Image: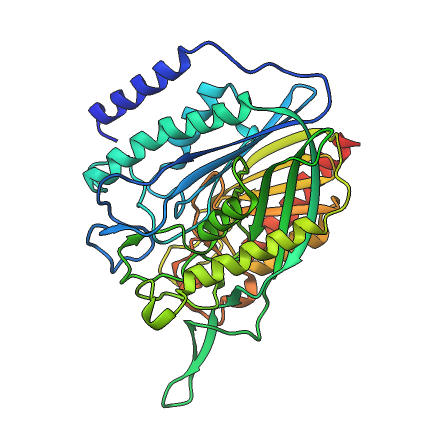
Length: 434
């Protein structure tokens, strides 16, 4: 970051910090609050996720948002923040986190800063040497907006009831397709392979105001890339996750905030993937809208069948940067002397519901293993959270190759180590909770 940009950012944060504290610890039952803020760019920007797409955006199909959910009980807080962005690449995770933590007086483990991984949103950047000036300007303004939406969620906290439910959706598909060349040799390409593992669970958390059935918020997580739109699309969009959230907020009515999260989906794409545009020819329903609506409707179905919510739940959080076996990006797995690759792991719980934030693109089998081993009845997996370490494949994927393995900075066995570390961190949370 150049000196002038850094100074401007510091001034922005200093102004935010000068505001009087507005958050009061509570020794009462569970409280929660939600908030939403528009983060749609007002200038053309470079869009994220596809190296072949170098021109600026040409319009907005649907708005981008940041959605915050804040929890508090007995003075302990936790904030889940969902952004309609690709992720926190180009070293943007820590500047954004620090602005929020400092202004809102949160501990590092209290904040789950997550992106839904839409490839139709601005590339975040705070470096004029590496990013377009419009993108740098956008990211600087994003800092203040994230502080504001977090403040609003904390200020709006009120006694709440929390319910958790689970559904299933066909929106995603394993994308590691096996193809053969003319000589009969096989290789892995990005496509569709329904025979391989996928986590179809739609995880849903419902917030209602205590003493009533008034709905305040609906948080949901589902394991897929938001890549129904490809590199030829130049319209800004939340894609599958963002469109699902927009559908829910319209369907559920004014005042309801529906933050979406991407589950463990490093090897999962939408059923219809990398399309060039929103096609509406002869009444055709654009695939991103179709898939987003289908996912949103499953969340709505889960809400209808949800059991009686809980009115209290101890909150615990922890964060750790885990050193995992590494390899150079773009190369085959390296030996034992390769430098370690860090992965940020954040865990938290509200009563019997746990949240695992992983700072990368995690293969779906890893998320399934964490959920199966968790000591909590409900464990939400949130990826692209508090970091951007790239793809973390499973060990068996390395001999097969493919884009995720080639571009990963993790070596075989990293998956097993992170599963064990998350299990340990969740066990400690559970012990402290009991």
